[in-house]
Image (tube, rainbow, N blue to C red; front, side, top):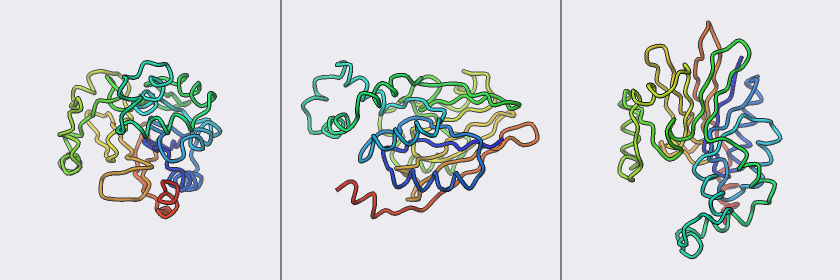
Amino acid sequence: MRLAVLADVHGNLPALEAVLADVEQQNVDGIIVAGDFVDRPQPLETVRILRALGCWMIRGNRENYLLAYDRGDAPELWHVSTQWAGLRWLYRQLDREALDFMASLPEQRVITADGTAPIRVVHGSPKSVTELLLPDRDPVAMAQYEQAGLLGLGYSQLSLDAALAGFDEPVLVCGHSHIRWSQEQDGRLVLNPGSVGAPINGDVRAQYAVLTWRRGQWQAEHRAIPYSLDRIRAAYR
């Protein structure tokens, strides 16, 4: 059993297409998408492709922002400020079907494939889509968090020990940080596949992971796929 694990596509269609072309060569049995798949510049195309593939999907904070705006729950500032102009543009690109699909998704879920151990999928942490789960037993990953400025942005943060105490599944998949890492502790695996569409670990390639069920446990492999940066720059323009 092999599963592709994607997170944080952020509407980057060229990056998604490159990753899916690589996924096709990996002989996977399914695709997990750990939130934040919509964003500029190509949100609707991204939603339609992932839906057509029948992926296991959850919402991230970007999807929640759009749904709050759609429900009329967004702060007044979101409707008038330059800072939130991107969200307003993004909302106008989505149709009712896409918004209803996002609303139907959970914020986290447990995936159980036949004959394998269950996998809990979250976006930020098991407690919140906006909380940073810290790879605090990995000095290299923590240095990348520090270099990217993530630790000073005011995000709520959760240690690995605290996260593992909050659920029973042997594998946790998360996203949100746009920095890839994986850690094993007491026979349990925590995996952040990095970002397909907007990595911030110094590698501009589209990043994802593959989980393989081997010898009674899930094993993670990180992958990084080059794609046309000219295409995404043109799409932004």
